[in-house]
Length: 79
Image (cartoon, rainbow, N blue to C red; front, side, top):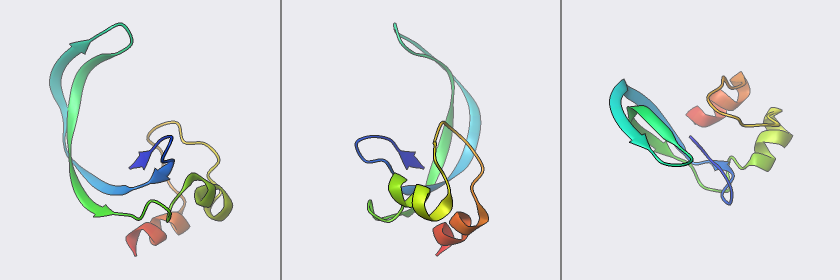
C-alpha cells in the first residue's frame, strides 16, 4: 500500500479479505458507497520503497490508484 505525501512510499503489504461491503458516507468532497477489509501482511521501512526509489529502480513514474507492478518490484516486496 502506497502512502502519499508527505511520506510518499510503499509502507504496507496487504491482502484484501472482503470487498463491496455496503457503506454510506457523503460530505461536500467525498461519497463512499462500499468498503473493503484488508489484512496487514508486512510493513516496510519508510525509506525502502520511496517514490524516488520506485522511479529510479523500478520505472514507476506515477501512482494514481490500483495498478499492476513490475516483476522486479514484486520480487523485492516479497523479500
